[in-house]
Image (cartoon, rainbow, N blue to C red; front, side, top):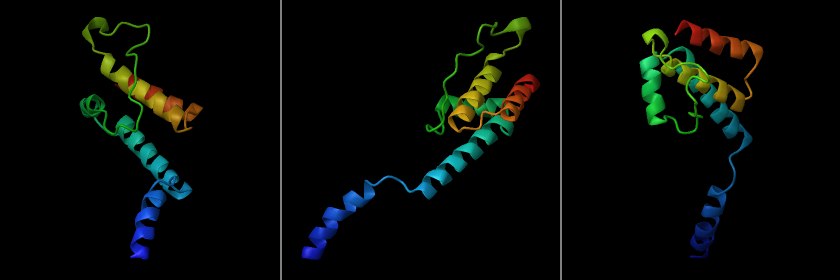
Length: 113
């Protein structure tokens, strides 16, 4: 009986402990992989669908659209590509991967879209 009472007391305390460094590293690696997949592998319509669902919610989905530029010049809708570009910049910064080469990859992807 005492064991059950002790166990019932300790389990919530153990579950409230912060994640281990290994778990945090795995989570960061997973978010990095998802970010890269969303940036460079998904079609733009599939990316927009995930963006609209904020899936996964742990990524930064904020965007100001196309900063200081027209949204639809010459009838071409740039806003979806701007959303993905902002997504890349924001998440690469958060993930400490916003290097010159990372920025160039994101920019080149934007130009291709």
